[in-house]
Amino acid sequence: MNKKLLLSLSSAIVLLASGCLKEKAKPEEIPQAPIPAPATDHRAVLIQSLDNQAKTLVNGLNKVIIEGKFLHNMALTNPPQAIPMTDDNEINKAISYLLSNQQEQGNAYTYKPDSRLCSEVIAKNNPAICIEVMKQVELLQTPSSKTDGSLKISIGASSPFNIGYGQSEIKVQTALSEIIKAIKEVDQVFKQNGEAGFQGTFPTTYAGAFELSASSLLTVSQLSLKITSAVDLRGQNENAEAYSIQIAASPNLASVSLDALSGIGAVAVLLPPALAAFTVHDDQNIAHEVQVSFPGLSGALILNNSLEKVILQALKLSSPDVYVTVDGQAAAQFSLASQIDAQLQSYANGDKSLSFDKEILAQIDIVANPLINATGQLSTTVAQGTELFFKLNSTQAEVRSGSIQLLGTGSFNAIMDAQQGACIEGQQNAPLPLQTAVCQ
Image (cartoon, rainbow, N blue to C red; front, side, top):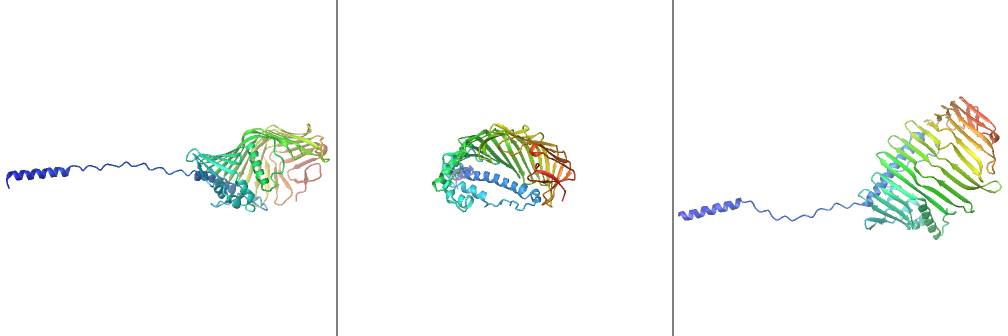
């Protein structure tokens, strides 16, 4: 082999080797479209929110009240039964059937109730008229995020309920004007289908708004009720007799807490001032205008099953007096000059005791009027530390400590002084509603 041929072969081998060692070119990458996030099932989110609040509330009612030691100790002849908590209970059915026939409407969704809401839940024995009413019902869901939104419930031209929902709270807002309109819509459906409908007259003035909120945390369910706008309800009854009810707004009308784990429930109220006027007929069927002025009331009640007692705390009127007038003239006055702090203890054998932590001073004054066949004054004094003991099936209460005194004048002209060791029982057709008796 000559030198030229050898050199050529060597060069070819070097070029081939260097070409093989070069990095292979990467194939051109095809851009990948982003994978879309799964769409939120807003109906399922709404159902879950409503279901969570319902289950926590029902569980609290069952554990704290219905199945609690306190109520069990009361030895009721017909005690309430626990509300079923199965997945197919009527609460779940109602929510599911209510949110049926979903239709997308822009960023919102509409629903029409399933007829099974009537045949299986609301009106099992006579669902026909219920189904006709449900044809007027429409629900509009407007999500604001993946977990929150609002639900408007309409009945015909009325929108009685607006519900805001979230992961741990729902709020229901309603106005008295929309409630009345909804009742009128339902009344019209009843009459169109040969039913009697609403018996009576509708008010001519109806103002006022309310808000109910429900929230839950673990085993605790909380409810809160507000009067967000003052109530003004006026009209005439079927006899063309006027009535009116005015109630002031109250941002803390009532709150309820139920803890299923501890078995403790609590209710706090702050009732606002109210004024009611209505007509009452006397024994001669003569009409008289009655007016009741209520100053407001506050207090709290705690049910503690571990202690097997109900505790009443600081129950008092906002001002000491409730007034009643007849035809514009003073007729009766109830006065509570103190607050009430008391404890009702239940025992496993059905006995009970009621103790008063503070002195109670109360008084009723009645002046001559066409409606009450009595006049005079009745004063009640309960000494601090008084305890009344009630045996199972007994009509008497034994004064274990302290004392209770009733002092009457006029039609109530009598005295009852029940000291420690005495027993008290009710009496009829007598000046005083209570009397002392030999303990049995």
